[in-house]
Structure formats: structure tokens, C-alpha cells
Length: 129
Image (cartoon, rainbow, N blue to C red; front, side, top):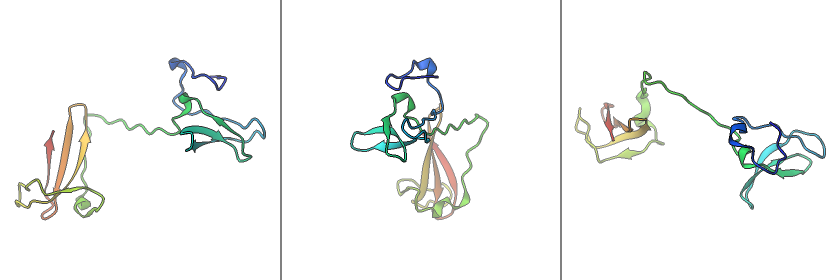
């Protein structure tokens, strides 16, 4: 794909990978950098040369995870001690009737699922939203 750097390529030509850019002044490899003042992504060289990246090159890294319907969600045993997970007091554990649980969500094509783990007994259950 060859572009002039001024116009975005047609949708059929958009590459899923960012293309390598080389400096016009020193031929060094240019790296993507954020221009916070103008709120744009630019290609920047060590020598100081910069050029704006076209919208088709704004994706620097993309991680696609594909799940099959046969995969099961695995909840680790120590999630109740994880301080980064949100907690709620709005549910009751079906096993011990304790009112505090750690929770997180997962979205699928069928809808959203909330996973709960009781902070007292470690019982795990889910709620389909």
C-alpha cells in the first residue's frame, strides 16, 4: 500500500498493521508519538523531524482475542482478596447468607453476566443481566 501521507486510503486498502515510516531527513525509523497540544498522533524521529499520521494509521497496537462458545470462564480462587476488584453489599450469598461479594462482569453476544464471589465463604455464583 502506497499513500501520499495526505489522504486516507480507501477502506479496502486499510492495513490491519501499522506501516513502518522512515525519516525524510536521516532515514531512521520513526516511532508513533502523541502530540497532546494538537491531540493528534504523529510519527517522530530522534533527530526531531515529525509528521502527522493519517487516520488509517492511528491504531498502533491491536490485541484481538477470539473466544469460542465452548470456552468456560475460569474464576481464580483468590479473587476475594484482590483489592482491585469492585465489591458490593447489595447481594446475599446463596450459601452462607453473607451480604458482601466481589464481582466482575463479562459481555457476550447473548448479554452480560455478573460473576460474584462471597468474601466470607468463597462461594461463587453468577447472575445473567
